[in-house]
Amino acid sequence: MASLILFLFLYLDYVSTFSSNTVVESEEYQFTNVNPKCEKIRIKMCADIQYNMTIYPNLLKHTKQEEAESDIEQYEMLVNVQCSPDIKFFLCTIFTPVCTILNEPIPPCRHLCYSAKNGCETIMRKFGYPWPEIFDCEKLPHHKDAMCVGENNNNELEEDKSKNIDISQINELKEVRKVLECPHAMKVLGSHRHFLFIANQTLEQCSLPCHNDGLVPTFFTAHIRHYLKLWTGAWAVTCCVCCLFTIFTFLVDLKRYEFPERAILFMAFSYFMVSSVYMVGLVTGDQLSCATQSATKQPLVTQGNENFWCSALALAHFYFSFAGSLWWLILCFSWFLVTTLKWGEVPVGQVFSSYFNAFAWLLPLFGVIFLIIFGGIDGDVFTGICSVGNLQPSFLFNFNVLPQILLIVAGLIFFSSGFVSILRIRSYIKCNRFVTNKFENAEASEKLGRIMLRITCFSLLYVLPMFVSCYCSYYQTINMEAWLTNWYSTRCLHAQRAVFGFTQQRDYCPITDQIELENQPGPLLFFLKYLANFTVGIACAVWTLNGKTVVIYGEFMSRLCMGKDNNRGRPTRLPTRVH
View 1 (cartoon, rainbow, N blue to C red):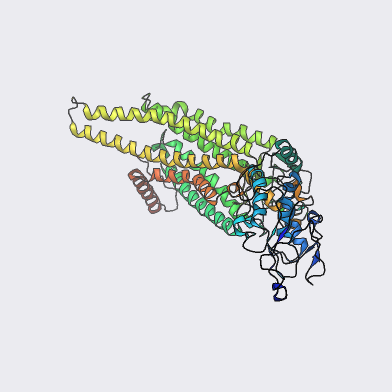
View 2 (view 1 turned 120 degrees about the horizontal axis):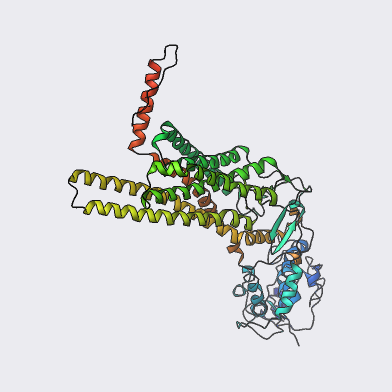
């Protein structure tokens, strides 16, 4: 016979009759009219337990049964699966404590907690949830030491045993729970297709809210998102200035720069355009990335080609990012031609210049056309721009991560071959005993050393940030759905879920496959990702900072001054540099 153990600390009137650790046993306890604070249990899950009266506030500080019911429903699945015979009664003793002559709720006994935990903790961990801290069995009283409520149908007290769970029943229930809805706050108004990938499902006409509601932030709090936007804007401006400096330096005396150096000019132009896209996002705020409205008139993340200017930003970002990576490959290939195959700088430009430009500027157009046809464009709520694959991992991988990795690796192969050739040439010059002029020999060796140092520094400033960018994007690719699922699940199970527009019961909320804390993106990931996108433009300016640049600007200023002095109402021909 199941026994209900009540250790009641009675008032002085009852001390003569009962001790402080009295055990009362009965099949059912229907406490009525013993305390004016008692109220009849109205929570459906606990309507048929061994007592029918409860008292509030309960052990979790709920003041009303409505509040307690919204929280206890989160654990209804455990009751339905029957992972422990005591789980239902244990939950009810927490959320609807028995009402007695005392004015405080009586906690459940420790052995009751362990009986429920030993049966149900395994299934909770299977779906990514640890045993809740609010149900910490060690914090509950032992039935021999203090008054508590306890019933143990399992006769398993504090033993850590796992029960055999019917996996087929769990999986069947799991499939039922994964019929997800798009809440009203995320429901898109309009016919243009929007969707989110959550818990292995596609939520049609659904998009991510742009503004934090203060209850369940979209990945980051408003404070972090503010600093993330300032961080991105500051580096975008820095990159833009560095790229302009590089472009102007090349244009002042373009003939002096042949391939492979001229490829850096086009890289600088590409990243100038990329940084300009981010500056547009900084100025416009969320007007372009959040141009969609929900059924509740809240801004949602723009998707697809719905907004022209959003699409224009995304396509420009993709086109010039891709072109910049192609110019890196061209830089390394022309370096390979000059160093390994012993082509001269001028012949490389004369033979391959038109091919290089066609390759770098036309190839990204095919990707642009594909994106226009099939979509893959969405807003970035952290920067205000639109780009490829923020909410669609497959597009992010196929149009960003994979091409970047292939181009980096191909460029490194050409660069390494050229670098080895330079080492051999330098070693030959140092070891050549037949050179009569040792001063020229040392000078040539030193010049090659400077070239090797510059090209190595530039390559590192390109390759390392691009690897960081690719890693961050790849990490986002493999985790975005889990992040969205965890965020959606948190809102779906929230006590104020109605504010978010959920209409289904909590039974339909998804259960994440990993522990909740691991299913959240870290701010550092996005800080590094955006910084890496601008480092290449800064590296181009670093390349131009040398003695040659000082000479070029000196000659340019001299030409300007001479032209100004001789300008007396007639055009003056500026002197050209004699090579």
